[in-house]
Image (cartoon, rainbow, N blue to C red):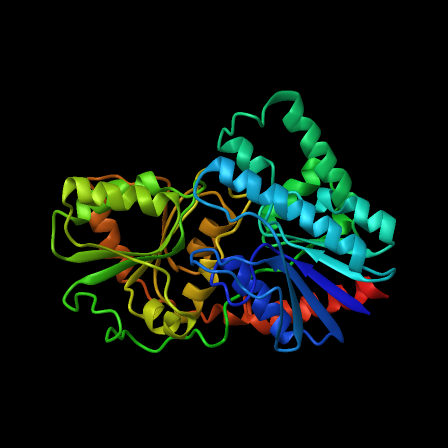
Length: 387
């Protein structure tokens, strides 16, 4: 039995979806695994080899256009990836193979449905986010009216004809069921953080953050579904005092927006840095006194910030800016992990940061959310699908 995973990025890329797929394939106990991906890294130059092996997984890198931070480039990159992917799978898949498709690029469940039928393969969709709803809520101009409704119907049709659909939150499962996807076709498997990420106490040697200030950290991609405008209000207030320093690590449209604002307004106590190597991630996350997570209101049933699980591992307080009725906000309240707020009130945000910084995670949530538990669930799903 052969298992083919599809995602636009994979090892050695450091983006979140790439790391999750790499960690999963490293730990699964399956006879023959392949990953079909593109030849570029998310945030680095150069081209990777067409074929490579990593920890027993055969990597096939297919041609596509590189994606940049604009809509036209993303669309062309996705289209060329779709075409190359379809050709590769039609040529290489055999009857009975299991195909596991992530959601980068979007709508893979629909794009790959004809391949599933023609080649008589098993299909599992791993939904890190739900498209086209995310794009619709971001007001993409071509996703409105009849076309948007038709796309949702086709997406649901493809999910209902798959063997299994795996989502990463209960909010996402509920939404898909309400949208028309059969509940028996859906499994919830939470994302995870590597066991190498753990609480070690605050260390700062590798990053030189101010030692006399409390570090507020946002680590990861900051896209259009994040509340970076609210972060803008937060950094303006932090700039006016010397108690806190905000550190942004990563990239994305929100990262660029905040960096430009910081430069134009000459804001103080704000640091920007690029993604770090995986070997530095544990020390980086432990250097924070508060971790920021954000999600725009109305997106809680379409995605789940994967950075949550690494923050839980290092047991640091969380300030969440987003929908206070979401499952993420409820988790923070249930276990007293920090503070969830709908928006930044400039008059009270500094006091709220002080309150959040004093929070201590007393419950060890790694028993609820851990890599072994999620990998074991994936092992069962894939073995069951292959039968």
